[in-house]
Length: 250
Image (cartoon, rainbow, N blue to C red):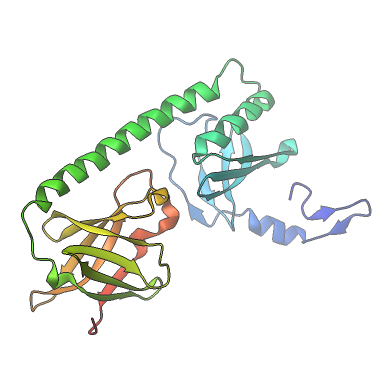
């Protein structure tokens, strides 16, 4: 990538210059707000790569995440610099502290402790997210005492991408279960009005979500949308893109 597609001792080419340029050409604007570590003014998503300016240099990055693993690749083409960080953590601060410490050396920045700075930022974010989630569950606990009738929500629902899920009653409790992804199972708890929350049985997800039921003209649930409760929930759960519609069968 740093050599525009050329590799090996004999100058073999994996891809052409035109393809390389297209890979790093901005396609979708990403807003830049507030102070940034390296005077970033512009950011965008290209073809699989995030591109931005850092201290006057073009930077190219891509990250990856699974449960318990986060990674990052960053390149500064003008400096012929490539940084690859693999971690067994589950926060971007883990690779950020390593990457930024290396960048500081190349940019001539001194006496900045990225481990301490990012640790403080992470703790603030976790505290804020924890307060949000705790308040949601406090309200839900109060609503659960009202003995609501859940039977009207029992049905099968379908999202054109995610597939079918069932909302069922088991021993007086409401449950969400995905047909395609059986690990996506959890108790559905009342929150406010037609707004519920789903608490996943697999707590490693760290991604409890709101369920917002919509109603038809007959007064019964016709579908629902979803949204993560915690602001720290990984975006790749794609709750915000789901739109479930009730099927006739139960």
